Image 1 (cartoon, rainbow, N blue to C red):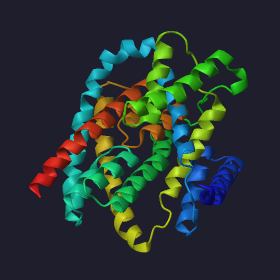
Image 2 (cartoon, rainbow, N blue to C red; image 1 turned 90 degrees about the vertical axis):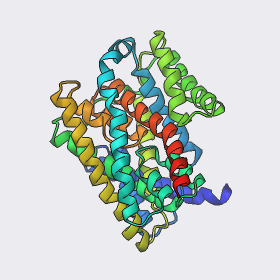
Image 3 (cartoon, one colour; image 1 turned 90 degrees about the horizontal axis):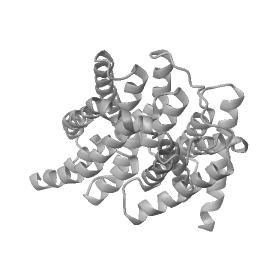
Image 4 (tube, rainbow, N blue to C red; image 1 turned 120 degrees about the horizontal axis):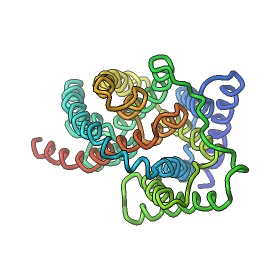
Length: 343
């Protein structure tokens, strides 16, 4: 642990410097893109960066609380109206699998690696599942990191230039303006929900547990606010840092094979996402930006951040991403066993 402290301190300094530069230049999402690009550049330059470990995991609880606080009685009442678009999520995931598996197989990846590389689940979950099933963990890590990196980078640009939304939506009040009892409830929801979900061995415990507990507080009228702006900015910084650190130690061979493969696959995902976004919009089932973010195959934490800063319907976006993640987490290992039997 002690030996990692200097690396973590240097990594955090690089991330903060990136945020400071982006902030000073007036660029969008400085606390997300600044650390992301600074750490990505340092990693590609060969610097020995180190992730923040459990601190980064804990930061995700903030976004879980933000998502849970957005689940109000109004959102619950709107759930029946969402069922038409939620029903499209299994079709969306199925099409990704049908296209992604043969794509990776055609490029020479084994069946297990191809399957988990194609799945639009969480980066860490897919790497762990794939490694346990005998897949190439390094390939999976870089392919999924590339997917998240590109989607997080391009989604705000698309939202601004194609859908005409801004990125300046208030992310939350300053901590000094929030009632102390609500801050206390947020801390209980974040830490308590995380640890309870871990004890129950729920997937994505650091987001799902706090989200469920915060939603309970919200639906019972105890919680009315999002986490303070400072907390959400900290979560953005650590998410950006974490994505950049994924590329530490990457070689030219890995860039040519794994990262390039991931880039092309993101283009395929973007086409499928655009198809579903357009269908939902034309059928008047949701506003364009809500549909776009709901069917953007990025990570749950990253999409939560983008939904907040664009002012999209956070409850709508979260319900769809949660459905996708549950489908992938529960279904991917089952299908992987079938693939192994075929081998």
